Length: 249
Length: 275
Ligand SMILES: Nc1ncnc2c1ncn2[C@@H]1O[C@H](COP(=O)(O)OP(=O)(O)OP(=O)(O)O)[C@@H](O)[C@H]1O
Ligand SMILES: [Mg+2]
Image (cartoon, rainbow over all chains, first blue to last red; front, side, top):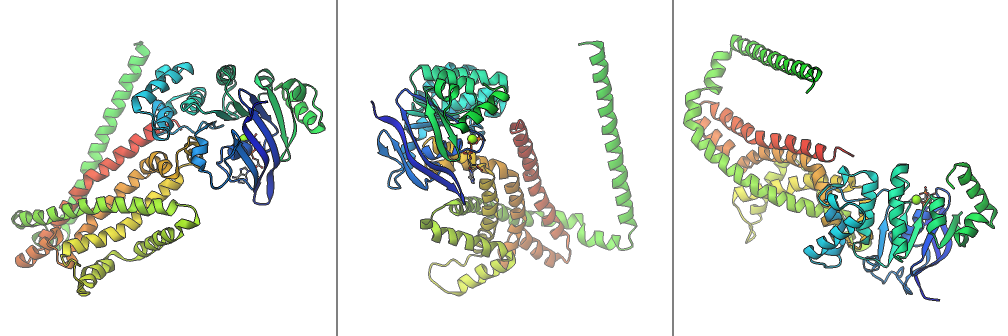
């Protein structure tokens, strides 16, 4: 079996007295799409933020291609260059045009010349269906368009690993489809993706593996048919039951 | 265009003509009332003679204008120094980590000291105290010393304005920048500061107008600026009109900054209006 692109070992994260992540072990292999599910507040965002080293771990390791990047001697800024993050709330830079948002990292972090970065960004924007919005400012875009720009921004430096944090939960149902279609396309291209989502139907179709997070632990992990279809753990069953009641599966 | 819409537009136009007329009329009435009540004051002839003497105003205008030119030069140089120093102090105060503790503490102490110290006392300390040390290399030009005092006081104020702006930028913007691999310095320079400065621009312009007036205080050190020139002229002509002339010139100087502040905040509101 090939080495994992991302490997989380015994990850612990506490805020004040509460332990949000209590020893998480998780591997994401190349070309794999791993979906994190779990109720609100179960720590999905925290796990993704810790994986991106935006938060300091209280214990455990984050390995990128086998290298421990959670070591304080490792430059986190460098480690982050091989990860692309898309946040729940888009987090586009409001003072920059769409094109500037997308070209920022390639230009100032990766040293790509402006023209090259612009050309590449225009290609990417065309691929996410926003060729005509390059000069627009984020506040003039719809939520779905903003989220697609955020995805283009994360793809702009061709990261090895994509981390998506509930990228559709701030969107209207109509806009959810357009963003999920894009993620499906990325998965089809063989991108390596770790994503948190509440879209169980989508998880079922696209995920190679589904992980259920509860009480700071990964309670269950496996192929979507198994975790979503025949969950072993009672907590998983309870969670999925609520989701089905809410009509989301 | 439909008849309905035409009729509506005509109505709107007539409304706006009417409100302009009302505004004009009420302004004229108000000014007239003010004018007559001041003129009826028993002391008015003497006040007019010693404060609003047109001949004196015209005669002393060149000297006061000359002085004002010095104020303007001090203003421009001081403002640039203030912005640079303040931005630097504000950025230092955002540094995290114990390595930066001494710098951070220094910046905090600086702000506490110079934000609390009255400008006039700072002017005396710098203007008379520094040269009093008789150290070699310490300037004794009142304009320069006055400028230094202004920079010390105002940079502390403006640093706090910048800091408020920096802190108003949502942490998610920082997370987004860091997630792209930008380091702290680039995150500050490219993501946080541009947003912060935009947000505090009206407040900065407000401080700029305050500085315009306070530039007149360098006269206490003996620099011949507009205020000092007015003082000299008024003591030779036994008339206070030169002060009024200097005051009006300062007001005129402040008007463009005020309009600019209005314009900028309107534009910012429009651009960020969607959120
Ligand atoms: N910066 C923080 N400081 C303190 N507590 C935090 C912080 N961030 C998250 N938490 C806590 O950690 C827990 C997990 O939060 P997290 O955002 O990871 O949940 P989540 O699974 O992403 O939930 P959701 O589905 O609602 O997004 C929550 O109880 C939250 O209150
Ligand atoms: Mg979350």
